[in-house]
Length: 356
Image (cartoon, rainbow, N blue to C red; front, side, top):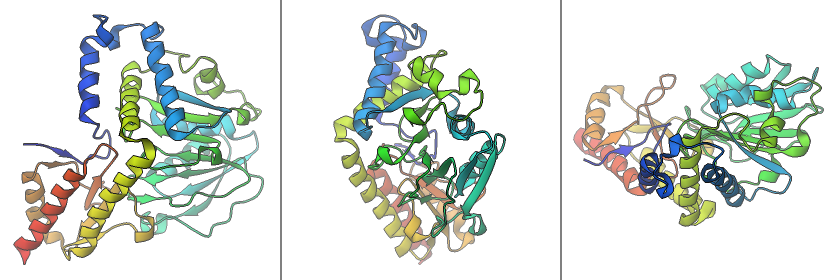
């Protein structure tokens, strides 16, 4: 039976990418060596790294004056690295608290300096994006999380500020068009729309670095990684390679404008059923709903056993909600085909028929 993978991450990847990646583990580019046993400084892998960086620049239309890095440690390490590289000694950073991951980013930044949480949606279990907040003047940077995987909310409009703008785009990068020039630092774990867990994409404006007045450990210093082309230490060769393949797949699909339309269609199909079907209700506020992570609950929890049996029988995997929210979460990243969305919609309609 075909499995329909709605996992929040590590998540679904295109089948053609998985096939090419598996072949490379055995014999990479017909050199009779595995991708994961060759030197990261060999011309074969240097070409992979260069291709991956160039695809990021092309797909996102990254302006001149920005560096693209593939690092390790996930977004969780970037919580600290962002502060190390941008928060000045005795400076202050402004954070928008819209979920578990932004709350963790706040915690890490507080280790290095002053943090002003200028808005939070914690009061309603993060089911909305705060609005009408005021950004203080003179802060070193403003930090936001573009898409909140656990709660199913997404920024539709980014903060406007004269300060530096930093964004964790782990769960929606490459899913829709963005203007990179509006940001000074973007970071994203690969394991949602870009590749397997193990590498983290960083896009940083060169001119904002080196101005904190603090000593930065080498592994946490963006300038060190830029000077070594993401190879200050041995890079995560397999995740970078699979990310390159995924970006090639996206480019061949028509790039970000094409996938954005597909993602809008997928989300519209699923949200329409949630709003129509009397046995379900959405968790996030409608105006802030994510196109990547659709969170919803049963209107009657007594129906859980019946619905769980239905979606299990349909080959659906990974839709149980996060423990802090409960209910269900369908993660519908780039590689999720609309046919799988329809299978979930059919399962929801089957529950309705059973209970009518």
